[in-house]
Amino acid sequence: MNLISIVQLGTVDYAAGLRLQQQLVALRKEETIGDLLLLLEHEPVITLGRNAKPGNVIASPELLAQRAVALFECDRGGDVTFHGPGQIVGYPIFDLRGFAAPDGKRKTLGAVEFVRRLEEVLIRTCADFAIPTKRVPGLTGVWTDLKGHDFSRAVKTPNWNGALAPEVLAEAKLAAIGVHISRFVTSHGFALNVNTDLSFFNLIIPCGITTKPVTSMQQQLGRELDLNAVAESISRNFGVVFRSQILWVDTLDALLGRSVGVPIRVPENLRQLHQDDDLRQA
Image (cartoon, rainbow, N blue to C red; front, top):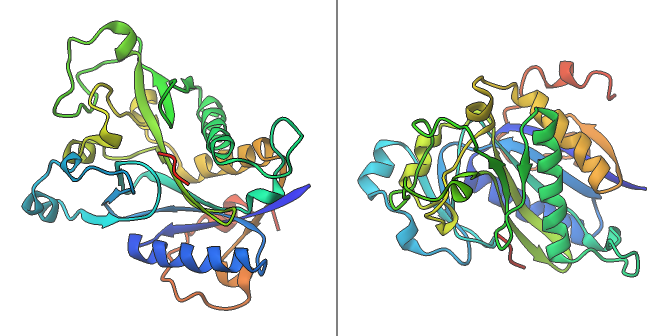
């Protein structure tokens, strides 16, 4: 059985997060470390993937500065998305050669299959909190059923049409996925809206999709969630979906045996919470 080490980093600057991923990917390729999942939050930032259209950032530079939102280009797949407080971002640094394909005939997991597994992890996580979610054919990510939802609170892109058919309104994006794969090693990953301030999504056309709103777990349940509880669910579902043993590690330094030079603020209640546990896709 595979082993996935999980480190919960707290809040990490996006630029520092990119540097950290580059270091860890290099170490994974050298087989200095095993498979690793980083769970963290970012300060407000808009990121543009390799397929991004600059026009999907609709806010002016002045408005971005006013709202203290940074802007970054990166090498993940996909278009434009937002990361910010209250959102759990997951960066799996996996060597896909260690995960068998679903058909059992290949020892290496394919890029599309990897993304489908990330979606399954998030679908199961949302189910743990009684939020029904699904995939949408032709799109990547996790989508929730908005039947009976109060659309006066829904975040809508500027071109969103409030007169859309009910079957279209039944879908809102809860989690975005964008990955990069180099020599079988993955980076970037997913962003799950937990307690996210959804007004930030009005600064962009999320993933270039103008016909569907963005939502969060908090909006669906009508209450704020404990991010650590959601992180715990994510970790458990990674173990199930990727058929792996999960090992929580307090810090990256503890994992690597040395400093990685990235400023990290670890949540104070992390140890208490876990005291019993001594390509191109968008």
